[in-house]
Amino acid sequence: MIRCLLPGGTKPLTDPELEDLYFPRKTAGPWVSFNFVSSLDGAATVNGRSGGLGSEADRRIMKLLRRAADVILVGAGTVRAEGYSGELIDEADRKWRLDQGLTERPALAIVSGSLDVDPSLPFFTGAMVRPLVITTGLADPGRRDRMQDVADVITCGQAGLDVDFLVRELRERGYPGIHSEGGPHLFGTFQGAGRVDELHLSLSPLLVGGQATRIAAAPAANPTPLGMHLEQVLQAGDMLFLRYRAQQTGAQRGDTPTDSAGIPPSSEEGA
Image (tube, rainbow, N blue to C red; front, top):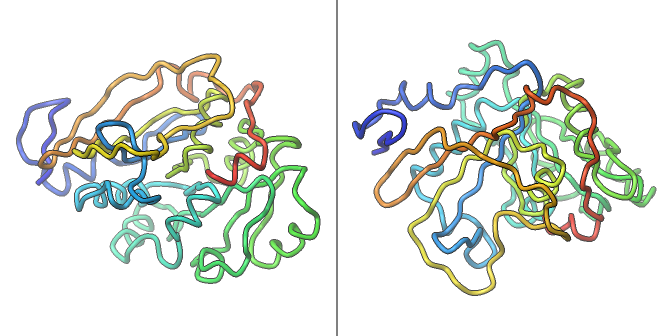
């Protein structure tokens, strides 16, 4: 049972009410949202995977976020750890998308600065739509040629990922609603570029300890921390689901290019 604590009261949400909360936000420009789960002490994984932190309610909310996305964007390391093969949304969600005038499935994009990704991964061989591969000018030409057999390869930046170029490129391809599920290096890079409009954070009632990574990672400190506004709090048992919106969103910024933080391909592979 999922309850809404903010805004409103504590009454259980009906399915239509929960769906309305995650209907795509309409903006004048591109919109970039991230979805993560974290333990109470800040761990993004248990034994290298995020699944150990989640719950049935967490998976339900992830399903709603995927359903409304124009494109699902993930880092190469996340694909290796979590899989992302085959059908990512079910038949009911595909019907909902068609009823809303969307494509039957969201597009799927993987970020790999070096293209050190096996094209025989189930992510590519089992994909329901031809994936996009986002890379940089440093990628090996041979790897680029092999990858083009299974995906559309897009260069976004030379020495590092140019986030602003990536956002514009996806919008021009018809994907203004960008939904990312990590990993931490990709999230850190978008933070450094000031291109995080929304964060959906599932807070798991666990203390993990150890050497687990945070939900964000970058080779250098973010010179300009991003202010976020708490818009929504849901509860399911001991788990909380927080929705934060950037105090200055993409719609307010417009589409003026800014200097992207970028990450070197060697760092990005742990995304």
